[in-house]
Length: 194
Image (cartoon, rainbow, N blue to C red; front, side, top):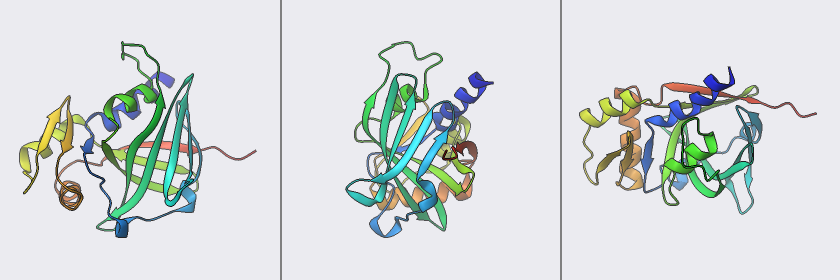
């Protein structure tokens, strides 16, 4: 069962939407006290408020001897909540073979130092549900939508936008309405405090 669960996270992000600019604007940022906590899903996810910016979160994923630290920002578009992820620090395994790779290796591979990823998110007292996209939804969206400015670059089944923040937000809004993006869920269970 662990192998199946381990494959779910890469599946959710396998056809992910990336951008060279943040997906949020300052006025779209929200905070949610329920987001802070410890979650378990084939590793430990620790979410805390960012030390120097209470509008952002520090997300630490620990798995075996590996870890990655992400900056997370909750924001809204059309009353839907999303999570912008940006890599801050990492210590992934140096194994070249990513077959059976960990979540840390996967995130390290798709997030360069200047890339943002976006996921839909739902938060409740039991945990968080992240909503990503699969490869087929990315392909359908790529084939049906053209940005007004900038480009959509498809590489390794990931769609990277080189548009600015405002147009990226318009693209997310349109993608949520028209396609199957943000439809693949993965649940991270909240670890109860001892």
